[in-house]
Image (tube, rainbow, N blue to C red; front, side, top):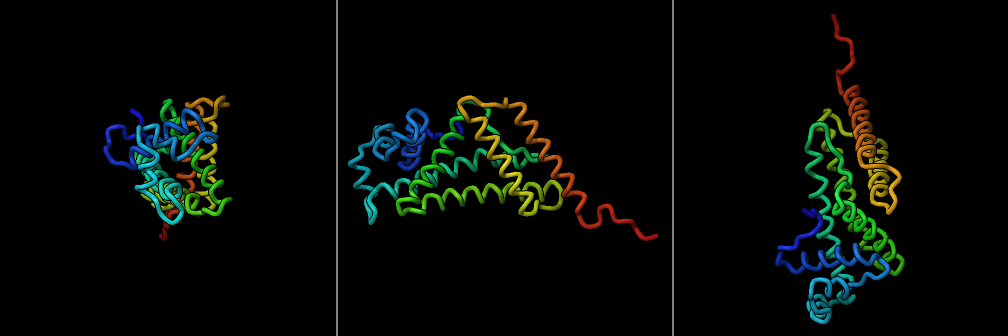
Length: 208
């Protein structure tokens, strides 16, 4: 099952998001366009322009909608692991998950490109999903250990997560999935041990 597509959904935004996934997976960012996303799911680009026309045309509006839908799917993918004990930070393993990470990375690159042409909103939206995932990780550690990571600890863990995901999604990954999972598990365990030691009352001698 592909966690990043919704082939049975009749919702237009879901259909366009699936079209975006197909285009980015098969052709990459170089051939990406809203018209290509529409054609990938048998939608008329002309009808799309009529439906989503606005001050900046259909492109910006559709980009926001599909990025928002994909961000929600991304959080659905990562959330179940964070509810485990200890928390499991998801790394891509199946072909669909690897492709899903590649789409996420492509969207981030697209957001940076949009920012260069006066549209910072896409990058801001994607950044909000990254912040939400970080908050979920912090909440998972709070539930598990009694304390959340501080900002530096969470930033380091996020950087490790981003690096391992990007490496596993690379065409010629230099690390195998089991080794990446083991490295992430060790990082989670080490941080958990640090947070437990810092809980109020832990390690403090009791009065006689």
